[in-house]
Amino acid sequence: MKTKKRYQDMTATEVAEATKEFDRPWAGTKLPGRAMTTKERARFEAWQKKAMANEAVEDKAESLTLVLPRPLAQRIGELAKQRHTTSAALVKQIVQNAVYQLVA
Picture (tube, rainbow, N blue to C red):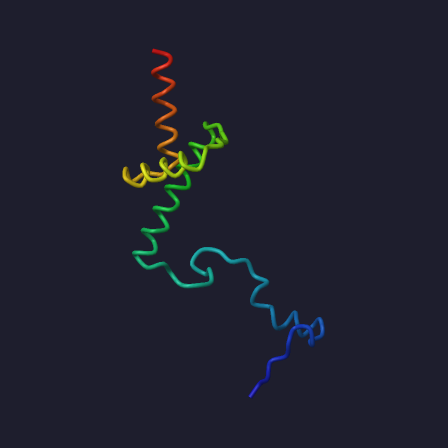
């Protein structure tokens, strides 16, 4: 039975021989690993679609930091949970409504 040496205990030629399989480029169906299941593929595609949508939004959005009193932040969190949305989306909606009312 062949015993394996650790890489740090091998000579340069032994390491080259042991790692020869990794020298060729990976492409196409020769990629390592297994194929995704249907469920995994659907989850990956949903993630990919969401990531691409987020990139498109981030290109056209500005970031703003708000400092809110803790009770107000907690109330926003509770209200967002009731409406099945995020706190950020709720704050965005509140600010949009306030700006539209000021302009009108």
